[in-house]
Amino acid sequence: LILKNTINRGTFVLTMNSHSAEVPVGSTAADFEKFIESLPNVGDVQVAKTIEPEVTIYDIEFMTNTATVPIIGIHTLHVTPRSERDEYCVCAKGEVPCNLGSMNISCNFGNTREGTLA
View 1 (cartoon, rainbow, N blue to C red):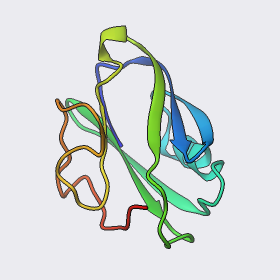
View 2: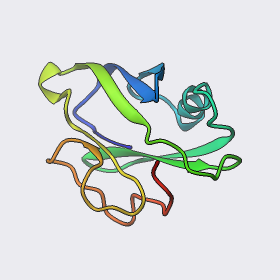
View 3: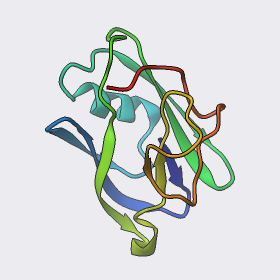
């Protein structure tokens, strides 16, 4: 997951199938990990947070459930500034374009892990 650093407050909702978890912008890697693990059938994950000049990257690695996992989506961004609410990118499976999110942010192979999308 990549978020523009211009998003400085608020929350967004992680979704997987019909389940969701509300996440505060700026969450630590440990807190983000807990939010993801609260979604059903996720199992244990590890999250690394990297802050770059323009974006913050949350790298999510599934540790115990390595079978096909549905894409984690982002919805309901209540963020400041409001004009930036679409400035995120969900990267998966080594893909360069965003699976979900802005066309102004792109994934690259350094931001993604190989995996299987459901």
